[in-house]
Each structure stands twice: as C-alpha cells, then as structure tokens.
Image (cartoon, rainbow, N blue to C red; front, side):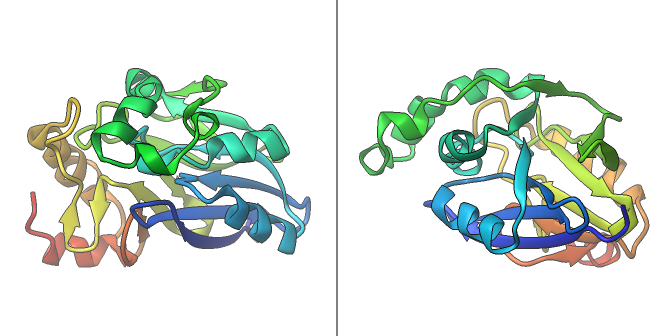
Length: 217
C-alpha cells in the first residue's frame, strides 16, 4: 500500500493538525488526532470519497480528541489509544473546563466513547486490513503519548512530542521533562534524517533538521 494519500486540516480551539491518511484504491481512511470541527474533517473525507475506518490518537489531551464524537456518529470508526492515557481520556470534561473552553462545547462533544483498542510499543497501524505504520511509545508530554511512523511514505506523526524547533510542554497531567527528553533524543533522533515529521501543532519538519536545530531537550 505505497500509494497512501496524506492530507491535513487545522481544527479545534487550539489549532491542532488533524491528519487524514487514505488509500485511494480501497477508499478507506484513518484519521490521526481529530481535535475538533468534525464537520471539516467529514467534508474532506467526503470530497476524497474516503470511508473512515479508524481514529488513531497520539495522546488524550482535550485539543486532540474533541472531534471524536462527531466522527463516531457519522462513520463509527474504531478508536486507538495508548492505555497509559486512558485516565486522561476519561477526564475530557475536566480538561475542557481547566483550559476555559467549557462554554464552547456541548456535553455530546465531551462524552467520548471508550477506545476500541489499546496501543503499545511496536504495534502496527492497520488500514483496510494492511499494516501501514508502526507505533512508538514516546511518553513525556503525557504518559501514553505515541508517534506513528508510516515507513512507505517516510512520514512520522509525532503529536505533541516533537515540534519544529521545540517539544511538547511537560507541566500538564503526569508530564515529565526527563521522559520527553528520553523519547526525543533516545528514540526519535535514532531514525533516519530524511523522515518527515508532522507534529500536532505548527509546521512540519524532518528528523535531520531537528537533530541539529532543536535544543529544547
């Protein structure tokens, strides 16, 4: 499945990069981090004639999950999350209130269905029955943060673990600077320099650039 089509939209109250990975041959797709505005995500899926079969979360902070309810209602996709972020996932109403956004969302937006599958290090991402990416557990921003490496298209989706010239904050629930440093320098920087990096916020980058320019960890 080398002909994957990758696109993204910026959604939600904190401008999250939501990524849509589709297989034009089967018209199946997965979404990474639907952080809000499910109607926008649905419109892209329909424009490309993709049927959404799964949602893969990089972590469970509120700004990365607020579109789940709308997508679940429209397509009933399976939800994938690392188990270490399950408690955080269940705290969505509290997270929204903590950040001052509670007035913008209905209870339906914050009533999340339980994940269907708990991810772990080394699991494979599945699209239309085929393995398309590998899961890497990269704690620090949150206990269950993960990155997804799509080897055939040379793209890594890093959530809020690794940004261009920066890394995710570690002062939120169970965040850890030591852990994110190990995740970035001890794991992500071991990958090939040419791998493109697509973070949860802001512009894209690549591993080689971050190795030489990112002094956050």
